[in-house]
Image (tube, rainbow, N blue to C red; front, top):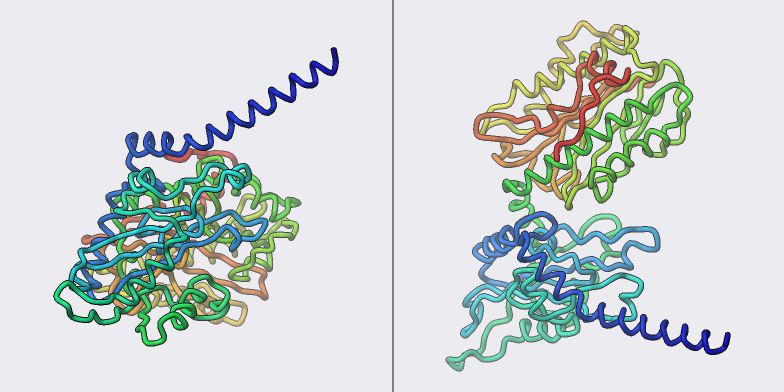
Length: 472
């Protein structure tokens, strides 16, 4: 009897496995069709956004083929969570690992219309037992991504060779070799990237082909945010505000910096953030004077100031917010006067902004002038602008230090930080206040205005009052 029961259970297991495999086979099409019908979005942006960006890029580039290389699962090792390359994501919304994107302008060769194609790996049902259901090439993927063609990644090299060797046009003339526009990585570590390996393979495959760096062109596009992008940034900012509130509730003498980090990153995840936009900075005491300190291991002592510089990422867009908290819940007179000076420097930069004219450098000068004009001094009697040792701010978006030209006037639609700081190591005293602003035709809009920054507001939040919640 036991033997018969064991056999029956084995049969049940086999049937279950077969049913699971069948579900894996049919699931993607159903899931993707439903998703497309319900909201037509990829990473919380309409598919039409991505299509419009591709069209805009093709209108600008008419003398070459655009090729973008996506990230692979193995790029992130055992502990990293997959995240698509920003530029490929910006143009396609395709989060599938090991993807390629190819855009061919109209009339590039004698008989070619404009074409766009994504290349993604074919489905591997055995691998999907580890990774979950993946979408494969074909009509379902084309519908899901809103891209003309989604082919197998195994076809990419043949398509690339055809582009590099266009052959003869319909009029019998020999077509000229095209340029390839792609991301050409530079700087430390660039030789380890998939983009670098792709460029090197291009040089071997077609030694005479002209390779043009696409980064500055896409950078100009990404600098100005659409309403959909601004909405995602606002969500990231609101979630970051929840993290700061949790930090304020957790900070106290005897707590560890990592406890504060855990509390605020829990708030990120609880409110829908996929990950922090950058390593969270929780620096207490002397660590408050270290700009990018993120070890977060020190015990918080009574009398410390704690600089909390964190930002939640939401659907590939990251906030960047800094607040400074007193460990004991109240600023000392010295801490308060330095804090107020940093806050006034931030407001001076805000007031100095002139739409269509101001550069980040000019706002920086306004903040420094406010520090220099103040009566607040160090122990030697010096004004405190000498302790403001970094730039005033930067663009934010898909990167925390996003693309953009800092020498030009800040364009309408860009989003920036304004983050003055004063760091006095001999006093173990560091203060930074950072907020996020949308540049409009009439001035700056403070997207992080709901996150408390007045000294009295900071103290009130630390006392448990003024809790608030994220906007849904």
